[in-house]
View 1 (spheres, rainbow, N blue to C red):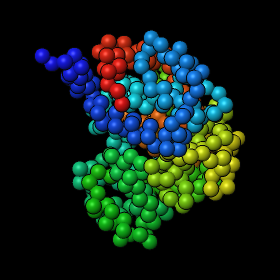
View 2 (view 1 turned 90 degrees about the horizontal axis):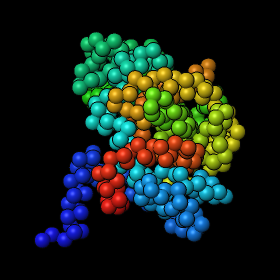
View 3 (view 1 turned 45 degrees about the horizontal axis):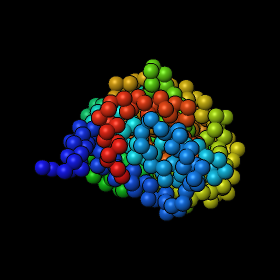
Length: 372
């Protein structure tokens, strides 16, 4: 007869398959933890903070106390908050609860944004490649030569993957006249891509790092008919790179309710910066257009209600201070950016969110027994 431990493992594995492929999500969360531990160290909380975590999470779910200690040490060494969401709970349970990962895989396509968000200001589309077909901005068939000629009407264009473009992958900025040969080859080799006019960003945003478009990321939660703006950060390029993604060497900083940067920015593994290598001091630095972004997100988040309730939105800020919609991440939108810079993601909603996500007893069983 199989042991009790083996039966438990079999049941948990079966549940794991039922709840949206936890293994890859568990691995993602584990790597995130190990990266931060190398920066922060393993001794990340005291006996009093250990008890604080136990008291807060009692009756909710089992939590990785070390992970909560790491986030506290990164965010604010002088105070302690037990409400931080651990990466394993976020990626294995919260994200798939609020988002339909399968639907997101098909709908998270930049070539669909002109249809889904046609009334939102976004970069002008010049051409598209969809499943190898050349289309114009109106989804009419065209050819490579026509797209190249149209590109020449613009000073600089962006060619980027319309799907699977995490971390700035596949983003190319080119001068269509000087770089015509390279532009032609890039478009010819593309299968699912979009060609757009390059954004001219606001001087105060450009001053942080001129070589990249420094984008604002907002995470929103649609819950009980209300859109909550949970956190807002700015992502900045570094060392002359053209993209701002942290996975490509960029850094990120929290934005407060008044649109000002917070004291510290971070890189992906938790190294802390009080100023950008370009010289800009972060604390108190004003970012234009943040209030406008909140209004836009609260309006368009409702369009995703059926398949995405926890969304991560990216915006640039144009020369006049207006938000420019770039993309929305409908799954795996990122947690650590927000908690390292702005504190616990859900703040006063934390217990309500956990109780909602884990209302199903099978999820509680799986979470309890399936350790990272």
